[in-house]
Image (tube, rainbow, N blue to C red; front, side, top):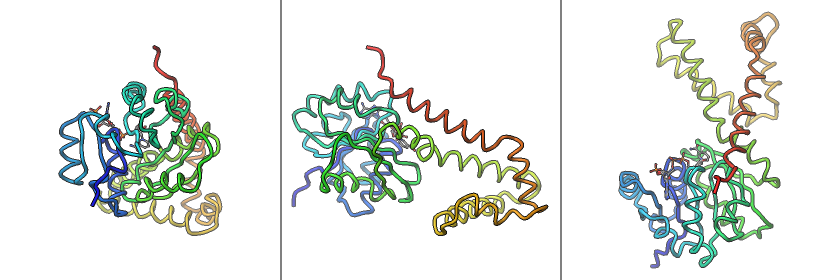
Length: 274
Ligand SMILES: NC(=O)c1ccc[n+]([C@@H]2O[C@H](COP(=O)([O-])OP(=O)(O)OC[C@H]3O[C@@H](n4cnc5c(N)ncnc54)[C@H](OP(=O)(O)O)[C@@H]3O)[C@@H](O)[C@H]2O)c1
């Protein structure tokens, strides 16, 4: 049986690990996955816990692999791509970037090839409940789309964007979004626990409330505002709370937060000075 590597990950950090675990859950043999990471501890953990092949040098991981996943921090993207450009031109792989902000034009220029796709997965990919937005430079045939979607299939849902400029907003809403909800969970738990609820009770209540609300959003046709109105009776408790949040400018703050994340994503797209 051949154990040719199908997918090589450049960067073996948190998100790469989520995607590798998803691939393994969907039945990809570990021998088909290679991961490059400069950190010996990270490599050892990936090799012993997940059974994938690990390499200190990116060039060694990608050799022969038809699909490369760029999973390093955006700040080192330029350097990493340039170090792989000769191999990219020779091997003509399908490259998938999961890096926030780094544009297709930069990736194509740095790698010297056109077959590059941008993606933005999010943290719930770790449990197969993420969502990944994808954008390709040109038109892909069904086989190419399937090959790319397969990389994320164990991580949750996927969707395609027509306009690359929308990737910054996707990053701001879905990439960073889980952190906003965790901040909300933190604040709700703190509010409950500091007023006397046992911490584990507060945690259970808040977690299940977020889960339940998310499932209602997913499983009913109702808009968020409609669901909110259904639990907001005139003169009731929810109305009192929502009034405080509105008065404090909470919806505007969320808008500002999304704008800040989106602007940061655009800033990360600026190539470093030569
Ligand atoms: N985490 C998320 O929720 C999320 C969501 C969407 C997209 N992303 C994107 O995913 C990318 C990775 O994020 P992350 O959270 O997984 O970061 P991370 O945990 O820091 O992982 C990046 C890994 O790449 C390694 N690395 C650095 N230079 C390398 C090189 N030349 N060759 C191979 N590996 C190298 C790093 O090693 P060192 O630590 O030694 O530098 C680190 O282990 C980022 O571009 C981010 O924008 C992340």
